[in-house]
Picture 1 (cartoon, rainbow, N blue to C red):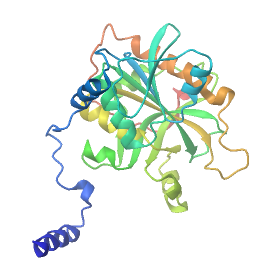
Picture 2 (cartoon, one colour):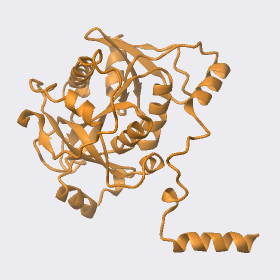
Picture 3 (cartoon, rainbow, N blue to C red):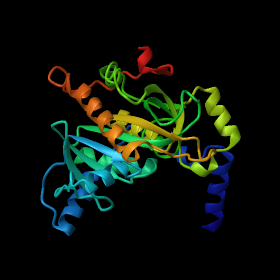
Picture 4 (cartoon, rainbow, N blue to C red):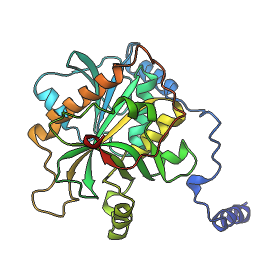
Length: 299
């Protein structure tokens, strides 16, 4: 048996295809689904049946949640049955939101996204801190991520190999004029999603710069791949706050660690999304567009 195992392993190595790309059947459904895990979590933790808010937020840095809790403006959602995180409810601009903090990295973010949509979420907004690649302007500023370079592993379990994962084109259209008068600059463009932030070498950074990539982050390409494969609505922003620690005084986000600006951005995004819900409750995810990087102010 050992000899057969070694032969199989040798043949796989000689195929020059990494394990992450082998034996993928994208048309097949997973045998392990979030609904089943949530069911068992409810049973074990005595959590009642119920839904999360229709609009939920991923806050990888945890700054938004920290400020909401500090101001007594958020409370734990009693129906969230995730084994790994807490979901908090809060209201902003008369909209109820759910928010999960500190889900850092592609695989963790998508795991939470799967569970959120299985729990009643209809729109997921991610705002992740990121490092500047192309110096569009001085940090901090936001990037509405049109496409994300797939330098992580999770997206390849949802979509066949390609360089980028894209935002749904219809979602992008809805946000066309949403940030024209926003106090903090909001750009449109590409990011680089990495699994290994401390392996951002000079060669990799230069290649990203040559592609016009604005910033590097850790979640967007996987979230967009999940969204396309599972027909869900996901909008990702990069909050460009640093130059990868290469200058003194880096990683400054602004007032309240950037949470005040982030909440305004979330509210503007949600209002633009909801503005056409009555006329278009189901978004067609067949149409994706590879858009050139440009600022929303240029639209």
